[in-house]
Image (cartoon, rainbow, N blue to C red; front, side, top):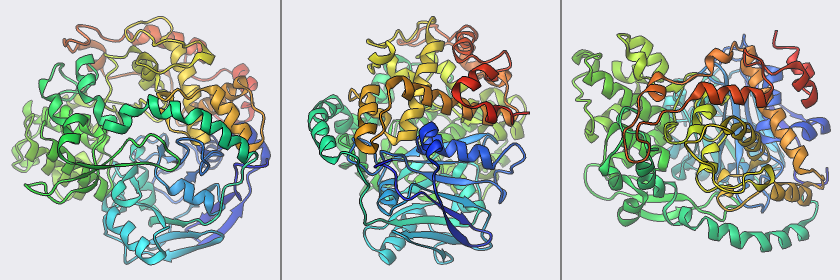
Length: 619
């Protein structure tokens, strides 16, 4: 192709300390695009059910897409993939910031790590100069300090992906943090633990080149036409960030409350984006090539939580560390999120774990000894912060217990605690409730990495997002049942495109469309790709992820949700006594996916998608 792609992949064998180059075959670009799609194909070919997620045979991939590093709006993104140590299944995370752009500017499309080093190292990429560097001086440092030290050593154009002490200890909740205090995070699936298992502290990139474009002038003219509308349509995200949705989510019945056990919470306003803007907001952060700027910069200068400077809490963090624990102290939630970012753990998993522990404590399932004297009652901000600190450090019984994630922690607690572990396939729920948006019930149940609102983002189309090319010309009824299976199929296929081309899903709120994707791919790469071909590519990628999980033992019986979500109404203003009828919607989903009763893609569908060879390997 004429543009969009760089110089191929960097292959790093950490055991042997060898670095080689690996080209990307044209057939793989055609079938899987890049980012998540290409990463899935590589992961599928190089790991399997026998792979220990924390063993040297697991493969860790940092992947850009063909649009990464260009001026296409919201394209400053990359994907990280590995077999998940949290779920034992397919694992991936999408992240913004500037690291992906730097890698493309250095002349590379991705990095593949295999093996494990015998002592701490970091990878340094300076254009075509690539080296493994001893990282003993970084081991034990938090992610912010790691980034500061590497920028000090390699210059202000150095962009860093790093783990904190939690990743070094291979905590199942460990994340990978980019851009230091700006904290663009791959939080889900415990991928930071995979870095820790490989003794890989960081990946530092300095790129001085330029991503090749097929039609640079054509792209400039196109963006002059499209950008004003995107900026205008996403103005609220710029003003308040995702935190601006907290109050509206509570009214709709979307905001998680008391470990998903109740509805209605008038305190939501106290942790809202509006309150954040009035108190601790200092500025806005824009990822590479982003006209939206939803990132929050904050500072807390006095009081018990003084010293926080950097990324402010987003909606998911406010939902899980705040409302799910009934904590309405914005500064406490912000401080707890800062701890998570510095130590390198996922705020969503951590918030769910603390909320579950609060419920277990109040139901008498955790003893005083196990709690270490911590008063884990709803709304206790100090106790929430201390529980987060203990999870980060892993130095107490409670910290080590919750560090496992809600599924494993609940099994360890026993006494019925599994009823309070709100997850799917081992991945905790994000801060959106399927009792509010019916489509999320199907989306969580079938998402390939476990409960995830972004692998399908179907709820966006039950709010304001449109996709006219696929027939979604107006917002869908959030409590409707018919059509929710098909909506998830369409939405998941399209989100695979976002994650493979590398675009932010907030572009949908800006009016971004499949037509835009098709046109931008042509202007950037020179490839003429129709909307139908794009959608088929997304379907191919999603089904390959499913095949990965099928090889690991996943079947239709695993596509389920906690009983609490399916049987306990919120009884609030937004949802009343509604619960999602998952079975009916899931049956429709399977029909549209062309999966059999075991949840396995049918051979005829795989043949249509060009996945016959991969399908033959599921056993």
